Amino acid sequence: MDWQLKFGAPILLGLPDQATPAAPVGPLGLGGNYYSANHRRRNAAMVFVKQGNLRLKNLFGDERQSTKVGRYEFNDDTEVVPKDATLAALKRDRIAQRLIGTFVWTHVQRSFDGFRYISNRKVSVHVLGALPTRGVFQVEGWGPLRTGFVYVSANRAQGNSDWRLFGIYDHDWRNILKTDNRPVTVRRADLTSDIRIGTYGGHLLHKVPLKQAGAVDVLLWGASQKSQLGAAESSRRGGSGRDRLATSRCGAVEAVAARGVTTTAPETATRRTDGTGHSSRVFVYRALNKWSASMWRRVGGAEQKAT
Image 1 (cartoon, rainbow, N blue to C red):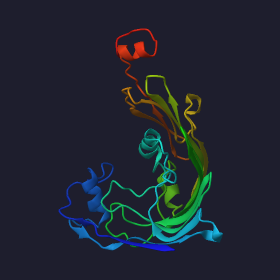
Image 2: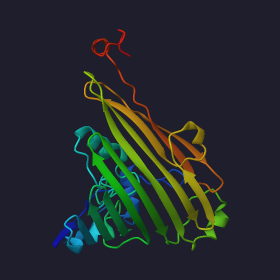
Image 3: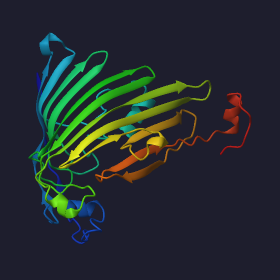
Image 4: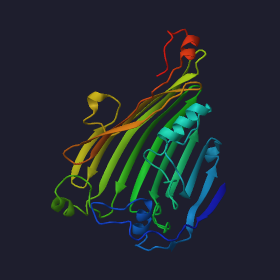
């Protein structure tokens, strides 16, 4: 058994008090967000427990199994790290924290109160149940929010491949105004109804070596979602196909050449709104490979000018 205790002490000084115009404009940058989240105070500070947990190892006499109880940090799809540096970088930058994360880009960040079970066999299985803490823009990070989730994943990284299957159940019992496109009067009458969201999906990372020309890395990510926003109910499918653009919630496909091939991967997003008001998105990453004439000669292709 081992334990961990870590404190956070965010200090925010001189926050802008004129960077939060009334709706529909809203905060003008992160300074306005910090100012609004801290009761419109220009100076805010707090000390709180960032992580505090116990880890029990060798569960049931098996050193591959362990569980953690208490307050901890977690970013989805960081359960297993590929040994290949290129796949590890793609996983970290393109997939990790898509759905669950600690908001590492904020000064306060976020933790989770709950448990985490790990079974590191040939296929690594992770089970989490937790309540997110406050924080992010708010310096008060002591208490949890009135929302929780259960996360289950099966992961494997081997050689030139990495894959994951996951399922998430979110339950939000805060009395808040739902963000769908029903009339405001209807949504205000629906404040006390809970929000329930089930998300199921996975990803595949694979690297294909090329003779004398580096390698091509392929990334596929997709998810299907069924949700209930109070009295409203809907379902989603995620993918990369254009034929599913109107109903997909979130999907991605990426092909990136590495090691010797210059690439760019701009992100484009297309949004749709259905009868319940959910914004549906498809993220498509297009790799634009700039092949030089000398490289084409090395792989036996026709000589042409670089584009």
